[in-house]
Image (cartoon, rainbow, N blue to C red; front, side, top):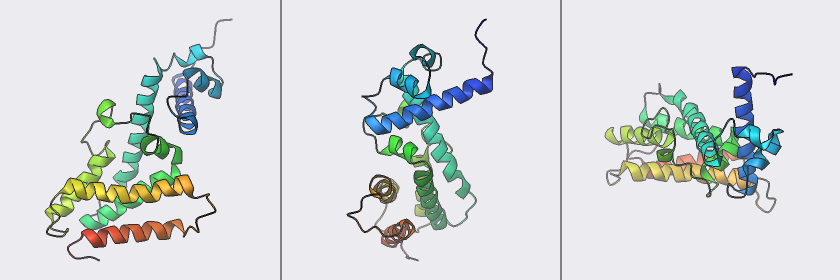
Length: 210
């Protein structure tokens, strides 16, 4: 009998399964160490079959990064209707942290796996478009708050402000993902750590702290 022809939905499900398996393996063992054969084995496919979906490992990595960056950007779009620029920044931080907590393997791959090149400039993501580029979204929020004179008068570099906020968010997320099971740290509740970090950063940046 000839092989059964897969429907478009079945092909999509197979593609997603390959991406999910690749993400898990990259996080577990590093991008350089994982082969396409291992990814195929993880999802129960032959090495030949996986190449029907991805030309090579670089193509798989690019699509994986694109998908994960878009997932993050979509998490942050819910804040667009908030009028106050500082409330928007706070809500953006909450959305970023929610993405990290609900998609820890996505977050590890994008921001905690140094071997993989997930630079949007080398992917299908439209760099600078806040609907696809999460950093552009953060930068736009900061520029809006800066234009509204919300930051201390000596803070006149929106890029530096955005990267300072990102560093604080990333610190809380990466510590929780990588170290929350470590018993040698008496971790305070995650929500308390998030709230205090955001409050401390904003108090240090704002012209009139809340």
